[in-house]
Image (cartoon, rainbow, N blue to C red):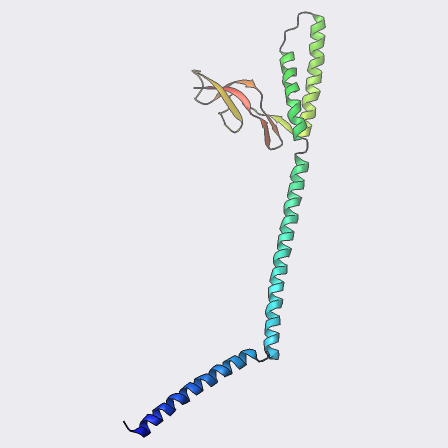
Length: 186
């Protein structure tokens, strides 16, 4: 190789390096230069869109919370008397037991008539409050409303039919207060 060609090659390499350095300097300079008005507007539009999206999400969360609280308040009002009603079921059972006694004389008969009247008024008040008895006798056993504690073989009954109610069950509006305790056929 001639000296001239070597010199030209070296010079060419130096020129390439210089061009690369110049390009690097230009890239750095472009990164440092101030944004244009269009860039600022585009950034602000993007930020506005992000804030709008965030605001809509927050508004939706607030609306969902408001609706949930309203539903809870409605349910709370609907079942406000549930605890009182539960406590009144036991005295109702006691009235039932008292009315099963056979009177021996007129005095006891008068007492039973009084108890019958009180029980009827008591049952009427509970019914108006939303309490209802669970009909179980001669119905098909339903574990959602009945609690079977015994089985009995009965010839004229199909299997899983309630043959005896040992303790009445009660509903308050659409909620179970107490299941009926029953004996079912085998």
